Image (cartoon, rainbow, N blue to C red):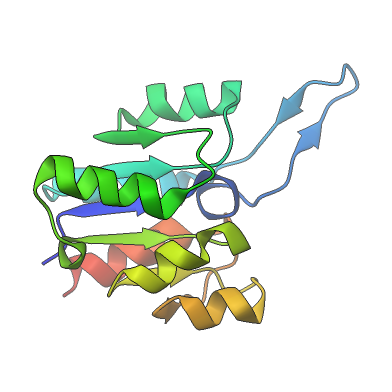
Length: 152
């Protein structure tokens, strides 16, 4: 039974794009449906974690907005980070799932019995994940994951 839902940020929670305004400030977008889905998972008693390769002010926003149980940023070895969390929290890989969208996510997607990828990723990433979602990056990915987990 899934106890913790781990998510990548860019390409899962967001669409993976960086928007730049006239002043050169970077912004990203998150759908309200996905925001609501994170909190729906939390209300259902699941823990939330983010594992991202980025370490930007946007990561700080995500950490503050969602108050996740686990947050790893600037991570280049996502599988290693997850294995450390599993050991520290006395969990096994059947109790967690992960959603990722990039080649750096492949080892983690392959390691877990339940992993997800958006529909608009490379075939190598789709092959590594156990469930290929209908939603595209940042467009209902978390909502679809929540529906999958909460209806099981």
